[in-house]
Length: 114
Image: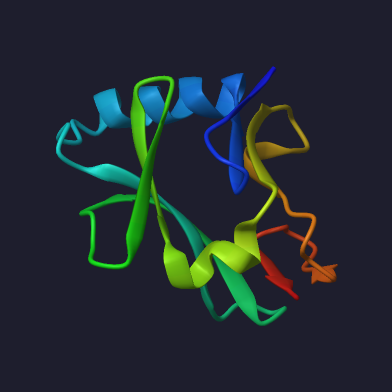
């Protein structure tokens, strides 16, 4: 089941569980927020950002299942409607980005173009 934090982004239950596990395993401070967004680079032009970070000036903040999530307002159009999932399979393991705005994605799924 996806829990929508706003019209911009959703995190699946598997993604939330993995993010909580990473926070605990890596002893990441509760002051850190989860940054979701995009940045220039990657083989398709833009790369996804999914990291624990400090909240910054242009960030909108939301909460999902107890995780504080921020999206830079300038990146919102790139990730609007995106679903972040986590897969445990043999072929697909890691965070998966399902982005309705991506016109192209690279083979590994970590970069995209709009």
